[in-house]
Image 1: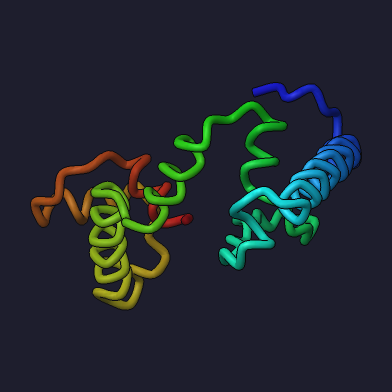
Image 2 (image 1 turned 180 degrees about the vertical axis):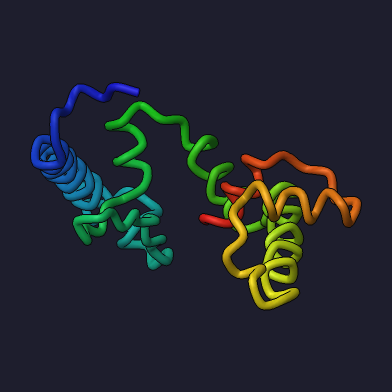
Length: 141
């Protein structure tokens, strides 16, 4: 996905401008509230702190701001976070397969030198049906 920024510096500059704009908007709203409008900071309602996104550059950025700049729907971000919290069926199956690979490799003295074709064959003889490349992927992960 292209967002129009060539590097993190350009994204950071854009986010800084967005932050300044948002801060000015908040100040204007706060002035209206203090001037006599109801609700908000002056009425004693608790302020909700916006969620922040910690990137590789260790910047604390508001999630909604980053998503808006990148053009990503918030539901996409939160669905991805929910998927990371619960392991998928494939991840669970890979964990079981890795246990069987380790057990095969520790079965006797020379089994530690087995490559994926021999491990695949040994598992096949035990009744485990899976591809050789899946064994390679699981073993190297």
